[in-house]
Length: 112
Image 1 (cartoon, helix red, strand yellow):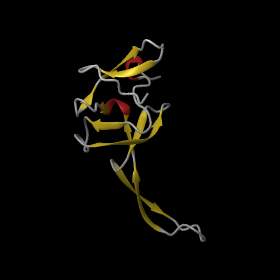
Image 2 (cartoon, one colour; image 1 turned 45 degrees about the horizontal axis):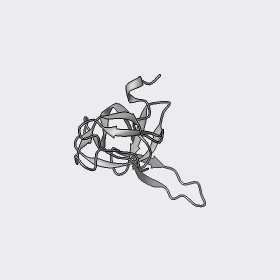
Image 3 (cartoon, helix red, strand yellow; image 1 turned 90 degrees about the vertical axis):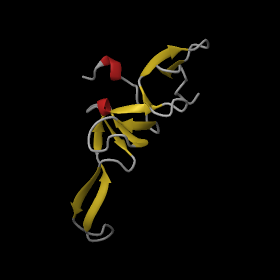
């Protein structure tokens, strides 16, 4: 079960900044979001090497590099106005839509 504060704060195609770990300080785009495990895959970050066997027809054998998952508690959404990773809160607009908002500058983070 995910903690309530981190529920739905990240979405696919968001630009995020890594807060802890070996990739600390780096920014990238979210490629995949796994709500069951609470992890995200970020473009060109946390690269893992996997040794792959040939399947005979299409795939060539060798070492394949791919992005590994990072726990969503270790990343923050990047605000366009602030330029760095910020915490997110939810706000209801006058038309009834709920959007994600930067806690520092109140900038709307969702592409409406």
